[in-house]
Image (cartoon, rainbow, N blue to C red):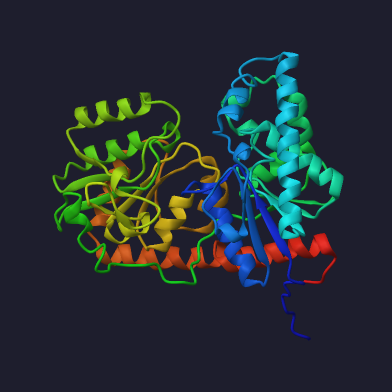
Length: 429
């Protein structure tokens, strides 16, 4: 039998487009990982968005593409929660769409783009004119496109009532030839087929499992002391934003029921853009529980550095080596980056059985403590056993890391992206 080799095809100039590529939101992080993978295959990657922190020589900044741009935000406020729109709103949508088409055409010409990767802008209508502009560009040029969908309209309650259903059907996502649709979980794949009659491929979120994770070094070694924890405290890390779907109240309840004075819950990220009611609720729960919770978002950034007071700023990857346990009690996730990060750093994880986890992750055999949507007596007992048994933690860590390497490494994305490009250009794989 002749050996079969994976080929990556001719080098291509690939353009990523979204509302923003900036900071540590999930779409930005996964786009960067795809760019790493594609770069390792010999392709060149370029970036267009309204908010960008990519290298300037490979970037095209179009401020109107950012969903937070004042004109865009003002327009979007008229599109959802109502069922009709005035003609003036339609005119504003079309005007912004035309401006954005001009910017996309400039991007294509400036960098001689051969493949487009719209990142989530053809899935969730955070920026309706941008989705329309991208769809029309693809229709007008026939440019090969890999549409990377993270969250769909139907997955968010705030988009259920809409004055732009005509546009949603046209562009979120558009049913055009020459597009390879990529989703991040099997539930999205099935819903895309059922609702839009579009086939897609699942490429899950990934981490570079082949590269060892960073550990303790001279910079982060004193992190525990810096945030007020002792060496023998139990560092329980909640590595998420403070928004309702993250289920942080379950982490608080778990720490309360552990009833261990050494237990410290550390929440790494700030509140999201969904108001302050949830944060107030959590503070009430913490006060009632009488536990020690540290909100350290002001000490965590995308890169290391110092704040205005001269205090160290740590990255999320500085926190994981110190953690004794990771909590991830989300009610809903499109995939679950924090879950993969816990595996990567070989940390035990308590995870809620959210739908994507139950369908796509749990069947792979990961060793975790799984919440049945709430904290039970059995959950607390399992956590105590795990924390008291280093050998068991090590066994779980190695088994989970091996599964992560098999199913969610860069190699997985490399194979699947090579196949998408081969489909678009008729090259062999």
